[in-house]
Image 1 (cartoon, rainbow, N blue to C red):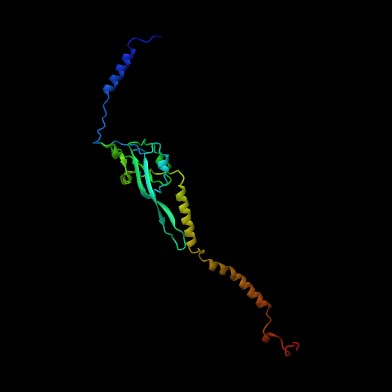
Image 2 (cartoon, rainbow, N blue to C red; image 1 turned 180 degrees about the vertical axis):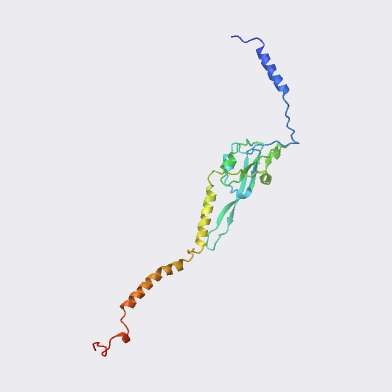
Length: 223
């Protein structure tokens, strides 16, 4: 069946009429901030204390926009007779957000939870060189990282908490004094008393009579 001439135009005008009758919705940004999803990818924050300079984030970044510099320091032994150890000290940690594709791979591969997503997105610059955030700027973004969502009540307890609670319970059980059942000594003594009484009566039966009760020669007894 051939289409009716002008049907496409009629459908388009119908859509226009339906849209014209609806109330328009305007986002009054920046006066009104938008309601962002809880997992928005705005900017990356750095928790410097957790960084061990393992370089995993820089190696896995597809855009090579993470720059890390460090040096080694010698740590004295913790106990006398121990040996010295070396550790990495972070000198520079920078992210070039003009190259970043916001894939989140660096956050996923970090084994020590040093990188976090922040929903903040208002950091546009007129100079592209200012989009390279050094570690001080990345540390400031940490204050805008939202708290993690609450766990599902039916979910399993995290393994870290379970292990810590088990260790604490074991330590408390070792330090606690032994618990004795109340009146255990009295019950034990009460259980022994009938046995002792029975033994005493048996001993009294087996004992010979005193000399005063024995029949002497005057009473017809044998000498």
